Length: 80
Figure 1: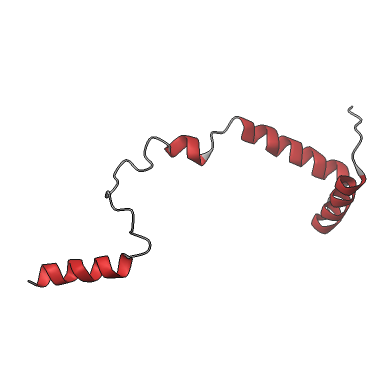
Figure 2: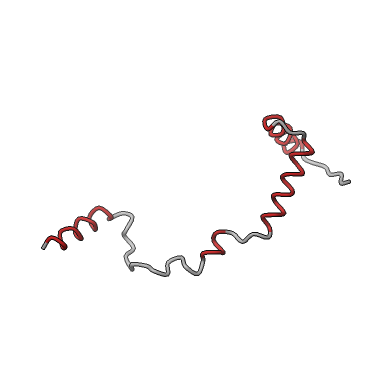
């Protein structure tokens, strides 16, 4: 058994969340700790994909701002 002290704001959030989910405070805290500990061993999406981000870059840094103009130019070039 573990006893812990919570600041009043956190305790109030736990009370409200447990009530909204139809759980006891103990159930909510157990599930929260279990999920947190389970996530510690899982690599983040960033860590999983960091070797691939930007790997196939177009070299253009204006794709988000000039996307419509770039597409128009590509279509015109194909029609020529």
